[in-house]
Length: 142
Image 1: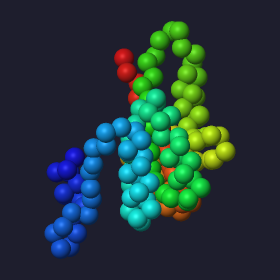
Image 2: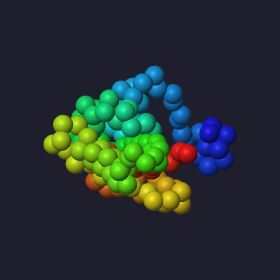
Image 3: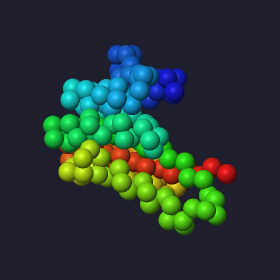
């Protein structure tokens, strides 16, 4: 990842214009996103389905303080006969992150190509509306 970023995120002076930080848990990860957003940087974190619930308090803070940021929520849906065909709709609950009194932007890509294009859309929308934006690609595993 760092080698990839060096190809695309180096300033004219040769210095890196990015930072990649490994957080110890979801609370630290969303805290870093909010801190970077507060400082004016574009920032994002990624988590799995259960991890997003740990981020809810900070998400509420970001909403009311109008701090932009992006959360990528990766969920794995395993196709099995026991699951209802609309099993993936459970991901829409993340729109009401925090205590249900906030409304966040949520993008739901339908293909790998949309994942790519919606990544930049998520950052642009977060900055435009000064709130957290989340994207929820659904990974299907066999």
